[in-house]
Image (cartoon, rainbow, N blue to C red; front, side):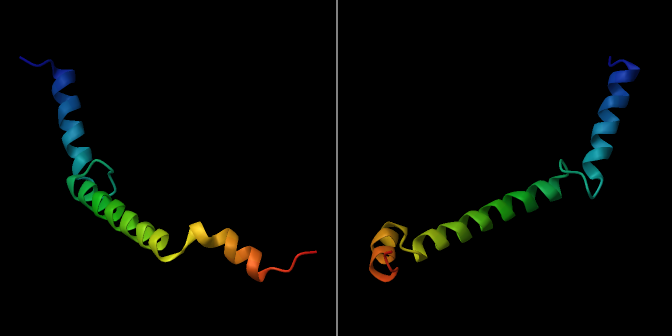
Length: 66
């Protein structure tokens, strides 16, 4: 049998998970995972679109030397 404090703590945890602004809410966890995936795809596409490995050669070719 749970103590009264343990039972209240469990009820509070369940209620907090249902608060719309709660980070532990199942809906917000799903939105967080979707945003993380979307941002990862976005930054991967930026990395693939810009030729960072050629940056030094481009710089040396088009920037005037003093």
